[in-house]
Image (cartoon, rainbow over all chains, first blue to last red; front, side):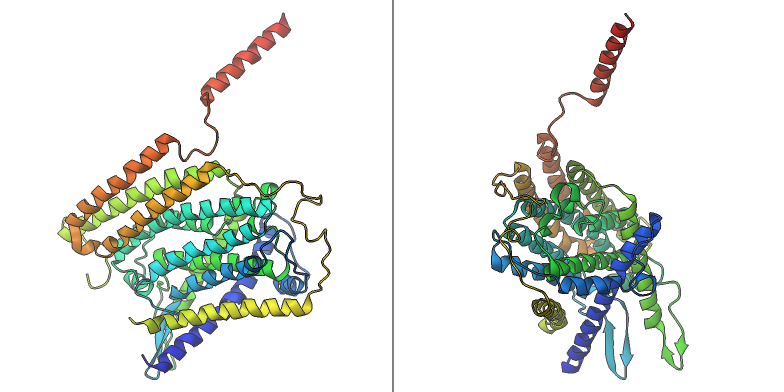
Length: 354
Length: 146
């Protein structure tokens, strides 16, 4: 690794950052337009073709709106809380492998910002500190709805954090590594972990919906009870930061679910050359984007279809059902793996080299 | 693996901060600034707020935080084991099985103690309530008939 390699990875980071902003724009548009389509409404259709520029128009509007600090607020914390919410959202995405790496000349270009050997732990760290932005926003506003929303949110996020950590353990056992690129390689071609590990896959995705505070788990901004939860006092550009963080988190959860359970960039077709260049990286990127896109659609589909839970139902579901089931799954998976290693069971869905 | 691997992550974080900072600056240039005393009040559905933010909270939030710390550390302990599970085999399963029992027994105790009950405890079961409602309803109907 010399400075050229670091430069290549930094360029990848810039490209991914731009791509995330673009995807967020499209996702917000599709959320409104798709929800309108599912509910037989028209939805935004004036700005640009099919209303595609609606998000851009919204961003311009939010930038030109007055921003002020309420009298009761703590000025400094109130101002930096949106940035504290934005930062971990982007940092969590750095470990996702978007496709197989390729060579230009003798330089290796990874389609991943940082291939950490503790990738999963990094993800858990970032999703843990993501709650700080909202807690500080709610506390620093000095108003009752934000405070109630922030306390609810922290309880909800840490509860489902536990479920999420437990749901990843079977994948780590099966792949024998914490590196996300290693986990994707272990699911070569179509050996996706969603087949043997369907229960943790569902648990991970559901807890991801709860972590991002999306419906039906959006109790922290239950409009009829808490106005807008922790971000009630926010407007203009500061609100935009929270909005961007929320949609980035949705993309992160979809991308990580794809990586851990749906085989990442692995797909049925991963070969071919055009003019002597291998198109495997393009195929990999295609499969990755396809699967992530399907999961993003599920996010919006769930939002449109399901009614909001009650708070006690949320906590009962998280602590009594999800944790119990996932602990049982971890035990069962480790027992099966132990049997396989002893030769009592045939090896199936094994990582390469086994 | 070296510290340099984290450099691209720092670039990503810097980009996010620059984007946020640039948006703040842009908004500072574009947005109007006309604060009025009413506008600076905390939000309250169009009326002047009368009550301070609540100082007292349901104790469940505190309990959840305490339980979370205990359980989250236990789960993080499982990660090193999970990476090496294939090498540990049956021995590893037995070890973690006994650890899991230590995780599950407190969870059952917590649930039995009602720490995770958010709604007020029901005095009567659902069937009892239905039976009582039916009885009252029938009594009223009989009175009406008589």
